[in-house]
Image (cartoon, rainbow, N blue to C red; front, side):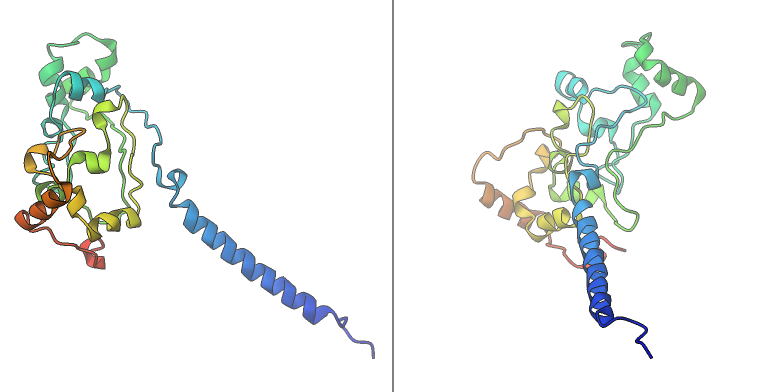
Length: 216
């Protein structure tokens, strides 16, 4: 009786299995690499907001502090988004008839919030508290970049786990005095390393790298 399969069947089957396993490994590694690229993390992606808001003008020209709009950044996990009433505190008098601010005036009159689009988004399984970082000496610029130079804010940092851990492992170089938390382009006046060590001790900064620090 003739053999059902040719003599090369075992070899062919082994080659096919090896190719499938190799392909699966390559696809897995490629996906793991892709999610760490700017295309995967959303880094530098332009975000079109429903109302044009130029941070360059508000921060640089008008000298508005970050905390005026993001008022809960020092006491809550979320930095907060300004209410329409906060916007109208100025724009009830300035540009109060500009068509650019029509949605702001409508929101104020109707009580319906402006549908701002979130720029910095972490996965649901990641816990992040703005207040603890700010009160320990991490400046806004460290994560959000030079907002004072942005017409439209985008995500400047990759916000990957590796990026976060690089700071958590060695927080000292990223710390600044409380008076400089919202300062853009801030540079230490003296020895950066010495200042970092001083702030670590003064603010009781710990190097938290265990899982439950961020995954709760």
